[in-house]
Amino acid sequence: MASPEKKAVRPDKAEAVEVLKKKFSDAAGIILADFTGLTVEEANNLRRKCREAHVEYRVIKNTLARLAARAADLDELEEHFQGPVAVAMSESDSIAPARVIAEFRRGVQKPAFKAGYLEGRMFTPEEIRRIAVLPSKEGLIAQVIGAVESPMAQLVFTLEGVLRNLISILEQASQKAEGSS
Image (cartoon, rainbow, N blue to C red; front, side):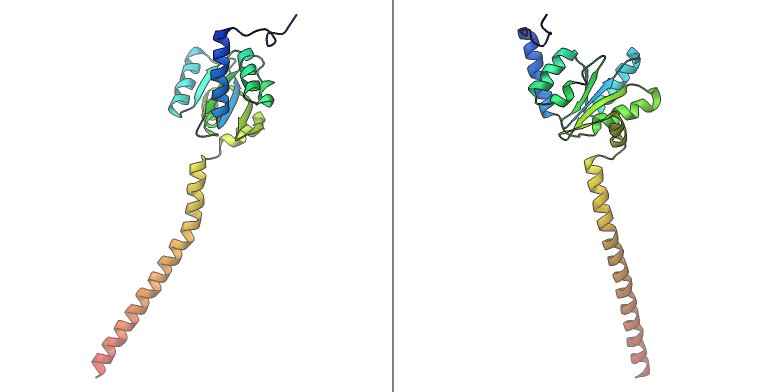
């Protein structure tokens, strides 16, 4: 018997695979999570948090997801579509899906990370947990700018103090010279 992936795909399913392939291709970050044990209310809360962070969170049939992953040349992601899998994706911030799920897990302890594909590389669940606590790319850039800017600002402040002291000394010397003449 042929596997479901070898059969001809119905037009509606082919369209769904094509849409999903595009989403996978356009995503900067893709996180796969096992949503087992989430209540409907918890799942809805997670979806809301994802929307707020501009992260798409979907439960997709594994067969369609595997076909779309293969079509998007994400073969290493394909093997993780086993059992209950939800997909969290972001086109703009590769870490956002991991961050949102990790933050949600603090209160509920679910869903469990299965795998991640960020910036063209696969990550294990443990690596995803560590990545999730990193600040966004913009946050890291701001930190670097702050680290570079801080010593310069201190130098300017110090030089301004020296200049103020020099002006004060010159004014005092000028006043003494005027007073003694």
